[in-house]
Each structure stands twice: as structure tokens, then as C-alpha cells.
Image (cartoon, rainbow, N blue to C red):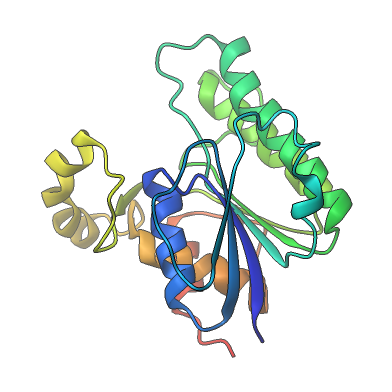
Length: 222
């Protein structure tokens, strides 16, 4: 089985890692990336749309139909934002994109990257976790085949270009953390493989913590 995949956030660390895994996996026949700035990468499988406003997809939505999966890796840090602003750039943006895809591709697998500690109750004390939880819950209502990924510390894939300075400074921690706290550490290769497995064979549950993602990545699928 081969699939067609749409990826957002491919100019960021998580999205770039997922993209590289999709380009390397023979089960992925074609990849469309939708970015707000050019990716600067070419590949026979790869098509790119540069679109600045994810709150208004009317000009590009005709190009978003016919996909089996969306790997939504776009996200921003909540540092320095109040809840109203963060909700607009997280919940509003993501659910608007999701609604468009649900209308065009109702049976697609929608994989959304949130984070460890996301608050499904939407009523906890941590602002970003409440907003991410509300976003997860709305996507789960939209898509029968929605899968929420909640990674923590992730190891980048060889060849990635879009790495933050803090990651470069702290990358040495990964092998120690993986050995001592495996429930908190995974690789972006594992995240990408788990998403592809979810799209081709299904996921064991709708919300995946770190260990769940690692286990799904290790599954052998056709």
C-alpha cells in the first residue's frame, strides 16, 4: 500500500524530520508540503505550496484534495504570548486547516504533533497545555482516523538543517536520557515512521505518548 501525504511545518525541526522519513519510505508515493516560507529542498516525490495565511486557505484548497494523510507538524512556542494570542495561532489555525481537509478528505489520517503534558481536560493550570488539549479534542471530533502525537525530547535526523541553537547545545543529552528515561526521549525518525504506520495500518489508540510512538514506529507493516 502506498499513500499520499500532506505535511505542514516542514521548515521547522519536527516537520523537517518527518518529511525526511516520508521521502525515504517507499510506502509514501508523494508528499505535498504547505509552508509559509520556501523549503529550499527538492525531491522527485515532493511538491511544495508556499502560502502565508493558514487562516484562509481558499486560494489553495483545490490543491489539498486527494491525500491519504496529513502530518501536521506546525507549531509555535507559547513563550511571551498570552492565552488569547496563543490560542489564535494554535487552536484557530490548526482547526481551520483541519476543517478544510476534513471536508476535502474525510477519510484521511490526521496526525497532529502536540507535546508531552498536553491537557485533554482543557481546564488545567498550564496555558499551553489547555490550548493544545482543546486543539486535540477538536481534531478528534473532525477525523475518524485522527492520531495525536505527544513527544518530549526528540533526536534530530541526520541531514536536518532546521535545528534551533538550543537543540544543538543540548543534543549530547539524548543518549543519556534515552537510557535513563525512555518514556521521555525518542527520535524524529521514530515519529515519522509511527505516522506512516498510523496512515498505512492504523494506530492502537488516538492519543500517543512517547512510548506509544516508539512502539508504533517499530511495527512491521506492508
